Length: 134
Image (cartoon, rainbow, N blue to C red):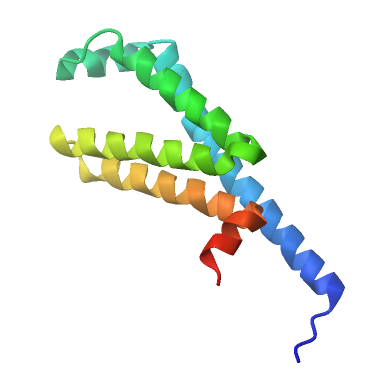
C-alpha cells in the first residue's frame, strides 16, 4: 500500500498546473501575435503572400482560423478541441513550409509549438492526463 502525503500531492498538482499555465501562456502569446499580424494584413504578411503567389484573402483567413482555434483552446471546456484545431493549423503550416522548401527551422518550430500546446494542456488538465496515463 502506497501512502502519499496530501500536502505534497497538492503542491505537485499545483506546480504542474502553474507550469501548464505558463507553457500555455507562451504558446498563446506567440500564436496570438501571429493571428493578429495575419488579421491586420501587415506588410510582412503581404510580402510573403506576394512572394509565394497567395491571394490577398489568404492572410486574413489564416488569421481568423488561428484566432478561433486559439480561443477554443483557451476555454477549459473546449481546450482539447482547440488543441486539435491548433495541431491541424500548424500541420498545415508545416505542409506549406515543406512544399515551398522553406528553411527546415520553420517546420520544426511549428511542430514544437503544437507539442507545447498539447504539453501545456496536459500539465494543466487532469482529464487530458488521464487519457495518456493508464
